[in-house]
Image (cartoon, one colour):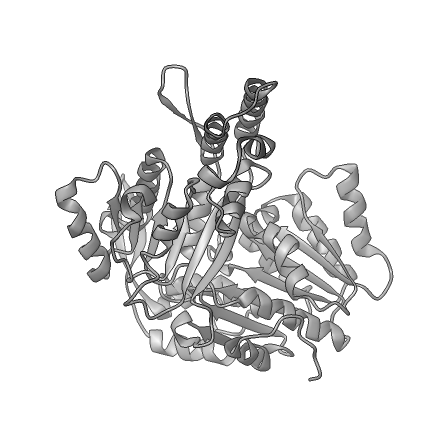
Length: 476
């Protein structure tokens, strides 16, 4: 069709669009970093240009919805398409209500509603989505569709019930089969209940998994013994999906950068604002040295990471969303990943969470408390052992000189201020021996100093030496 792209697609993105653009249902099984968001936006624009849709309901995890709204849509939706885009918020203020009302104004504009998947566990979120769907010819898309993998979850049931109201449906994920093939059932049911030709989840499970009974705490539970007929399942998927791995994309850039946003919890926000006032009071009326400003910046940064130093010098935890966001990201990682964190305190939390989900053999550490005589063994395990999927460390200790090319995903749980440490840690995966593009994911807390730190490092600014005290003070 005659469609004018705002940003030039890569070859694999063009193939995805050619296969899918006018299909009522389709799955983009595209590995993280291959640009599935752009494909969906172009697909939406093509359908709008043809008069097929006038609305879009985008469902995504909390860490992604802000990026859809602020970055992806402005970057890729063609300029000729007049649109009204609204980001759903749970607390509806008068201003937010006015924004939501614009989604129902008459006219030729494309109306886009972006909602976090958690909203579909609430009556308010479901009711509004249903109203939106009833008033538009809609493309309904689920980004990171493994978020609806559990058939019994409330949000899954609500989303599946709403799906039939949408004219077009899309799912997007990087890891459709590799972790648990049974996760596919709900995702494919969202597209069309008849795609996989099973009447229920249990008939699907009986075909593709052998179950065994375990007895624990006086109860009997069914668990998967092994999977079977996976070749048949993969063949079934091919008729309505497109699979892309980074290693197959020869035209991708060597480095791909992604941001994942989190919000502060109420306790974090309260403490953050208190600490901010205290920091400004300390700096008020003084010629602020860079060292003094960095100290205040660090205290605020610690709070965004979920902990603070008390009056006795001890570290106190604060309820936060960062570790949950990390685990959501790991869901979408196809193979191995490096996880960098600035604070040793965070390293321990990360390891505990990863071990709980993926098992003790899935992770090695490399930071100040890792015994020196064990460090090389940890590198070799990560590089060579297929069961060891995650390398967790601090850039200060692990960011120099070592080779970690087994990973092509690098996640910054938190960043420091030293540009050299950032660049060196990036290059542990991106060096001789790496045969794939490397995706870098920064987790950052919105509306905090965390955003400033990530932005500066991305621009290759060394905060510790190149940003003067007064400028750091303005960050605070």
